[in-house]
Amino acid sequence: MYDRFGVIAVVEHDEKLLVIRRSETVIAPRKLCFPGGGIEPGETPEEALVREFREELGCMILPKREIWQNVTPWNVHLRWWTASLSEVSEPLLPNPREVEAYDWMTLEELMNHPDLLVSNLPFLHFYAAAIR
Image (cartoon, rainbow, N blue to C red):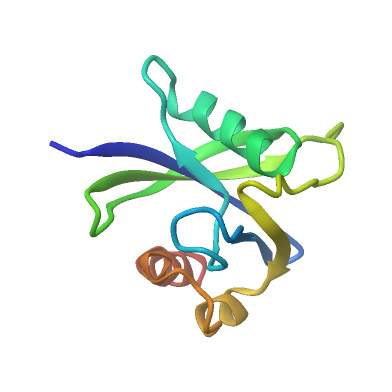
C-alpha cells in the first residue's frame, strides 16, 4: 500500500512546460517541479488537480487526461495529468507559502536544469519518448 496519493499537472504552451520553483518553507525547497499535490480523502484526481493548482498558482485549469503514474522513493503514488489553463483563467499568482516563482521551460531546459527535483526525471524521460 502507498503512504500517500498525489496528482501532477503537466501544462504545455508553445512547446514549453509550466514549472514552479518551490518556496523555501516546503519539502525540497527551491527545487523546480510541476504544480501538484496530495489527493484528499473523497476527492477525485481531477478535483485534487484543480484544487492544488488553484492553491499554488491562483487560477483554474482544465484537466484533460491522465498520461502516466509512478511511485516516488517516498512511497507516494503520483498520477500525472495533462491540463490546460482555463480560457477565462486569472493570471498566474504564486502562493508564496508554497511557490517562489513559476516559469515556462522547454523539455530540454528542464531536463538539464541543476535545480530540477530529481524525482521528476523518470516522468521527463517518459514524456520525451512519448512526444517524439
